[in-house]
Image (cartoon, rainbow, N blue to C red; front, side):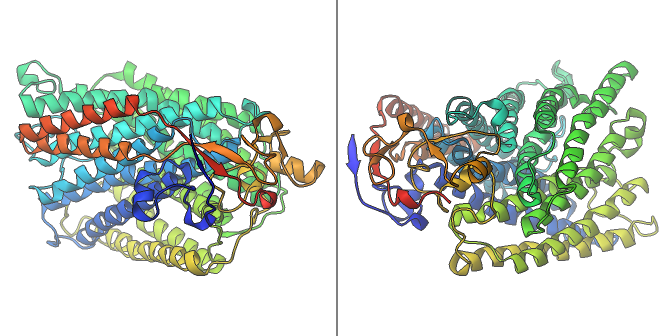
Length: 630
């Protein structure tokens, strides 16, 4: 076991003994660095997905526009949906969970650090495979849902092949990440943190992970069947040879509706951290919030067929799924009312993070109302395939997930960097984003009610669509200005932001009991949790410092005046394994089977290395542990 004693400034994010520079980031197993890379990769994909949406809105600004062709428009809206769902919202949530999860439960890292790194690289690798399609004959063009028979060779080009392989690789990364998060929360909580003391963010991470573990196999089965259809000529989704086109929809939505809650669950948790902190009150109805979270996760597997009200399954099936789709609004409503009750009578500080939290409540509630409307089978026959559905999903996922993610960004940016984002720039950015979002998407409700179908690249004049489409496009410019201002704020704060200290918000959970940014080992000694809001408990009843657990402290020394802790060591194996998988994937996509076989052999080689390459770990010095606690 190697002993490492050099001291590294915390803003470098490097563990002692890790290689400096880019190679240190590529081979790290530190959950904080991995979380930062998730967030940065998601921001790159957000730029790409946002650019695709921008082009679509420019095309639809006026009737009979010829800015982009019908074929390119189909590729744009397909890639936009795939990017925002699989490469932006999910990885962004995983990034924040990666950074915060061990800190909130009093652990030094996740349960499987190497698998954590592999999950990151597989997600990025899947995204790169997907975006390669733009340069090799055209991107996927059958919608992010990719319905059969549109996904079969007579109707689509090679882009669907990239869809299949890219999502298989990225989906494997998501599955690995879910298993890792769940194992960490179940097994590595600090002493005293029993389940009903877990922060709500951790409860939502648990439910998200369970949904990933049980829902992702349905999508994987769908993609594998389509892979065989496209590469080996089978006919699983071709009725002419005994297949069933609706099989794709069934498997896809068995994954696809839990996926909606995979995207929104972390947002619920983020809001449940921000609102109590800035209301200066404990979360109202904690137990009911936990059970509502569990109920939403359970019921999310009982509503998938409301996406298929128009396929002709009949009144009995439609009625069952209409009832379950309406019932799932009940635990969601419990959450909304509990957040409002937390704010009621509180000493609210409207920081930028709190403004985004309240913006989330408004926009997500609007999306929830339209969701109940879509849950009615007869009404859905009219709304289906109209712009009303486009408005609904954006109010839920953009107004929901992204609003919460911005709240989390302003709330936890000091924990990640040790500096505060500008509050003045942040509030300008909030209003640009909030106003631009509503200008862009609220008119789409009325466009849908007027009969404008979704997935059309243009429309004739005289149908009543022109003015609202123009207003919607103007809203995109305001929305884009908000994103640009956020980027400016990030870059400014990185160099010039005010130092935050360990606990800038007078917060309540464990991550704020250590320095900002947190040291390599997170905690000099594992803390003892004595209440549901552990840091507030110590501030009110103790001396403002978390009580350490002596038996779980440093491996050497007393944990306060020096000593060492055991940490996992960096490795390039997850990166190499991902690169080998990408080589095999590109070999299959371009039908260069020798390259595919070479990639598979490399995969087995690196898996074999992984099996027998035991992590020796390293001993890391506790640096300045006396100033650790806020």
